[in-house]
Image (cartoon, rainbow, N blue to C red):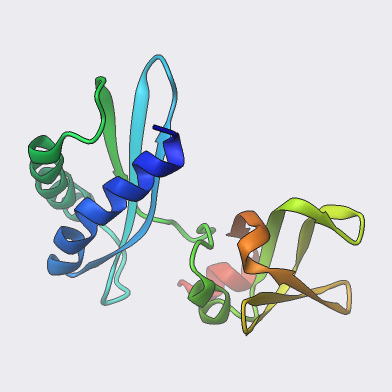
Length: 161
């Protein structure tokens, strides 16, 4: 089973537990071949900062869910984390939520001769992410986004202070 298929299956398994505890699932990643690492990124629904106690509580609950279904055949390390200030952008709604902040976006295919874009998020229009790159508004198909994250700037830090 490919890493994305396993990650999707794990997300479906753990999401109800995470949500019942008052958190939101941000991302699930399965990394490595020799020593597998399962990273589950979550955030509090009340927008408060994640604490070590939050991560520990999630780890215990998620471990129990994964022990029952056992979606990864080999040994792995479970890592629970928060998205941090320069968080990944994984849902279409993230681009509206963080409109006005600078982001770095990498596409799976080229658009206008490039795959990487950096600029100020404008938001979304249908299934497109709108970003201002050096004064030019660019539409990027959400389905083509491979990786995206906020860029750590003074403005972003001030918004989280």
